[in-house]
Amino acid sequence: MINQNSIYNASPYWLQELFLNIYACRIHFQRFGNKFLRLLDEWEKFAFASSQEINEFQNKQLQMIIKHAYSTVPYYRNTMERLKLTPSDFKGTEDLAKLPILTREHVKNNLNNLLSKNYKMKNLIPGHTSGTTGSPLEFFWDNHMCLINNVADWRQKKWAGLNYGEKHAVLLGRTIVPANAMSPPFWRMNHLHNQLWMSSFHMTEINLPLYLEKLKTFKPKIIEGYPSTVYILAKYLESKNEIFPVSAILTSSETLYPIQRETIEKVFSCRIFDFYGLAERTVFATECNHHQGHHLNMDYGITEILDGKSEPVPHGKRGWIVGTSLHNMGMPFLRYKTSDISSIKNESCSCGCNYPLMEAVTTKAEDIIVTKDGRFISPSVLTHPFKPMHHIKESQIVQEDEENITIKIVKHEGYSEKDTEQLLASFSSRVGEGMKINLEFVEEIKREANGKFRWVISKVPVNFQ
Image 1 (cartoon, helix red, strand yellow):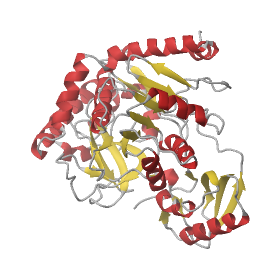
Image 2: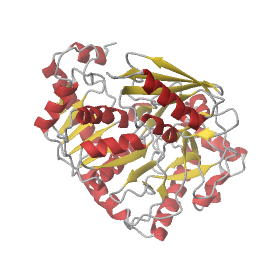
Image 3: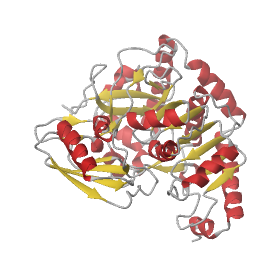
């Protein structure tokens, strides 16, 4: 079998860029075009629909997908028959609780039975999670779901001030430049969508000036990337006392920490528009220009916040994010439990959008530090000891058990014993004296295979009651 990645990696720069643009043409027919533009216009208007209109839309879509799942998806047919349920038992979103929670294990163990019999496998698009919490999860989307996801994504981009066709640079996890490439260019141009793809895997101290030079030449309106990747660029600009103004920064796929937001917004002289989406295509939440929280895209899916017993929690209290797709007929996910934790805010946004506001997903279960006395410590709290540390390039916190934490540190020139003492004292005051903290000095902190970076890794399980 021909390995496309091997051919791509072995090809010269000009041919790689040609391959990238051929790929862009292929997805253009799937995700763009007149239908995309029509739906984008409809979705922009629907974001400001009344609460009643939003509720009616969700109920109608839910009834449709439940009926479809009962008729064509063996897993849901078997589940509903076992519980003596039929589609007529689902009148609205409040009836979703009649269905059991769908977990990662359920999906892994019932992959074929979760596929709709109305679709041939060759007509479905394979997807998978990044695998940062273990082995990647495999699933499938239909073509319409790919279009809908693109519409939701571009509505967010328009909220950030980017119109379709305008220049934007991307710093995400695709290996568009072979990992063994030693010389520039460390980017490839998608001419069809006016999009500069920059490698997240070659951002060394030697190469960063080249990245900045290319961005100055390209002059993107916005930059989109993982928070950690854009932060690397921001820290480099800060070290040079440079400002590189753009209209907005779009971040996703990782926790965005306050220290990152502060630095990025300062050096790029703009606001960050963070958004939350899932490869499972059940939840999409986006920041508007009022930046009062993440609007849950109610036309995309139904979101529940549940406790450890799968009971709903009141607004303002955090719990597990559970999502239901309203569009993916190829492989419907109904009440899918994520590993992410958040809460619904009590207040609404002053922008006029009636979509509820969700707190930023600053915590995954595997990102929360758990102390011996049962306290849960958010990673956002742990950023504070690092704020005054000017001699640390990068860091990572790993909790092995309830009594031991290792902090990996890449030292910057000028790092001293005084920095160690200050960091340990400040960190201990937050996790408690019962926690043993070990500093490990390393040359680099490796990213995941997909380019993502986990700043906190906890191996201690979390259980919200």
